[in-house]
Amino acid sequence: MDTVEKTIKDAGFLMRKHVKGIIDMFRNTLMEGEELLGAGVSADAREHLFVTNRRVVAQKAKGFKIKRKEFPISSISSFNVSSKMFSTEIEIVASNNKAEVEGIPADIARELKNLIYRLMSEESGKTAPDADVAEQIRKLAELRDEGILTEEEFAAKKKQLLGI
Image 1: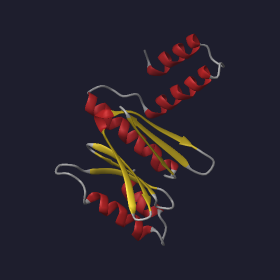
Image 2: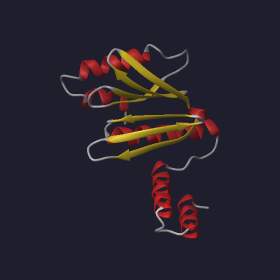
Image 3: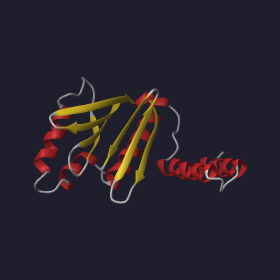
Image 4: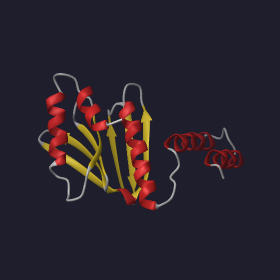
């Protein structure tokens, strides 16, 4: 799925031009050799997430100011997507840095997550866990932390999911 085009299309008639403008403004900041691979914008167009072949950028617009956090692909340790009642929350974690973006449509958020895992895998030269497997492991960890699973049960299921 092309998340850039889908984000523009899904913005709706009244917001489409505005969302396209946000994406075009970001494209103008790309460095030489950098390519925009994915984008997501919240329904109110205040929160933005961009994925390039080199970095992930989270932005929040407040009035006329844009607060931006950038993460080189190699520095990302996790990219989590969680669904709330009517929105999706994305958390990007890197060494000594973290950003959250809310309101990106769930299908686009999942696609961006898969894209980032693929880029992380390519960068590291290793096979990154499938995004769905990583999500299952996170849920198992929550069950362990809540005392529903023992540490041994968690470890066994994690090994099974990773195929170890």
